[in-house]
Length: 126
Image (cartoon, rainbow, N blue to C red; front, side, top):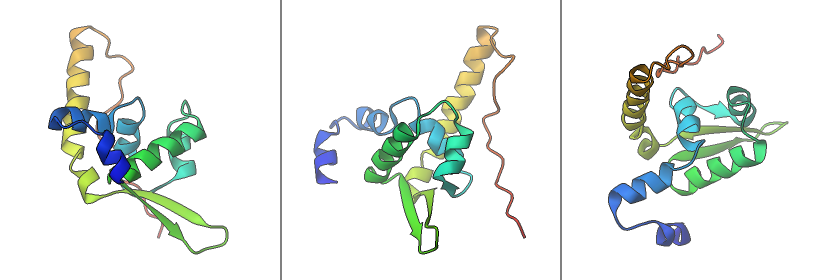
């Protein structure tokens, strides 16, 4: 992690933007905020992302302390990704960005296909 921290900017706002920068990190966090997700589950939720990029983005967020990867000792092995406490602190920030994006689309009359900003909690099978 020390190498990563050396590469991060010193200005806090620039640092924050760099940690969540990219097309997919905010989207991945958006889905992980509602509960643990398996890699295959995230891939289904984001069909446009390649598995290689998804794994790369998850590793970067794990390195920055936003996401935790848990490997379960099962056959076959099960891996779940969850937001850490530090990662969960970004939820109101990303929600604010989502709401701003909705207002922006409304201002430009581009709202017909916008998704909702709130992820529905996962249904846990009994």
